[in-house]
Image 1 (cartoon, rainbow, N blue to C red):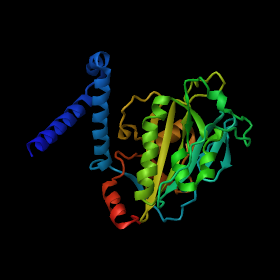
Image 2 (cartoon, rainbow, N blue to C red):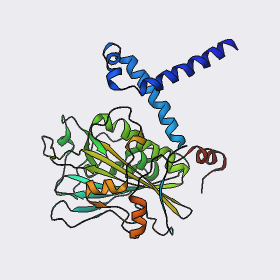
Image 3 (cartoon, helix red, strand yellow):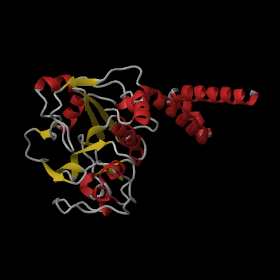
Image 4 (cartoon, rainbow, N blue to C red):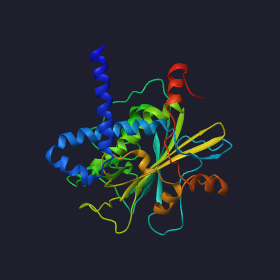
Length: 321
């Protein structure tokens, strides 16, 4: 009993120290990073995990939501595909796939938006990850796998490999490796906060809330830099998640900069949909009324969606709806 108590006390103290260290400014943590980088990484990671779990409880903050009639559900998008204002260049071409839809810009050699739906399934099974990316012959740009080689950027999925594979099967998974679904993404973001966000949607939100709709894509701010292959590099990445149930639509909107620091909490990148619309020139949820869009998009959520109770209900009673 004594050893167990000592272990519990030690664990709690370690977590408290980790959380306190995580919140220290970089100027204070930098000497530790220089002299003991592994210790710095361990404490930061531990503190980050604790705070992320705290954020997932969503005990404080507010949601972005609006009353709806429930008639705007679609296979891949909720309340209409994103619309562009008048412009001569950068118009998107819609590319339909088995598990997602792309709004592709030939002038930018990038998708400007990708829309898909994640829903509950009995088991999360995904196939073997393809070894390479394929040219999408439906595009004039015909961006190639090798256009990213040695560029310093990852081939960043917009419709995610795991989320699409577990819901739509092997053929749909293969289509996520079309280059029309890819943007230049910094490795630290692609393998860090972005992956975490994708997995939260695929493993929790898309199960505990029965189904959610996602719109995601890049942001290009002037001056736009390009890789050696000529492909424009985004300055930010956005993801909007929608959940409609019991006559109410709620959304989460994330805006993540390309140089987002490691161990950044998802709640720190929550923004309003209006902010993303201003940066992208896109109009999201165009089939909602003007009043509904104003209410939903002008003021962003300040917390993640509470998922502890839905998770318990899901595992003990089945689906939440």
